[in-house]
Image (cartoon, rainbow over all chains, first blue to last red):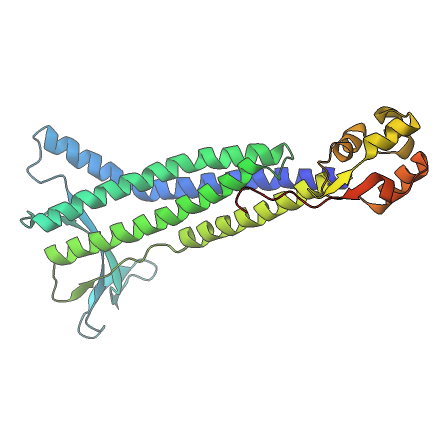
Length: 224
Length: 74
């Protein structure tokens, strides 16, 4: 009875984790969807010759340098129809492409594109690994060699994704600061989400714990 | 492994099969086979007690220690 309850709990947790990961992927895709849609529209316009602008655009976060008294940006509050001043502390901006003359910057852009593609491959491959893991968990066979290697592989991929995101953000920031410099704004350097690193480390730790558990179980199975 | 299990010798002396011994002492044939073939990592005292009772022998009749042969690296 005790093992049945435990297996039932594992099944519920695996189903919840599937939904959580699906939500995570959808949130990433929906955040990038607008950028992808704009990129597609601009690329199509450029390819069909209906647009004179380059399809490339830059997306960056700008931080205002001046204080509110010297930087009165006004906007209408529709609740009371009054104009209020605000300080655009951090704003996300989309800037048109400018010609890149530096070979270093061009190389960085190529490397950034490759790294982003690699991250995309990892995000696509991850569900297959998780599915393999959940399949063995659902069958109740928790202590299995394949589970240990799957946990470790997922952990390594998450850490690799974090490192690649860090590198691509660094290169992209370098590209932006080489191309743009504004009087009233500084370009904000985006930090990668540390959740990738934390989850990767947790998966590796859990893989080690499972490996120890597997050894103990094997010893228990060979105890008469 | 230095611990040798002489269960097959005692079973032959008492003229009892693996199936019969397993059913009498209340463990599975697979587990008893693990013990008999020397693959077991550990034996519970309760199991040892049951086997000795059934085969009318001492634990020393079932278990023997022999020094492990030197490995190639040594």
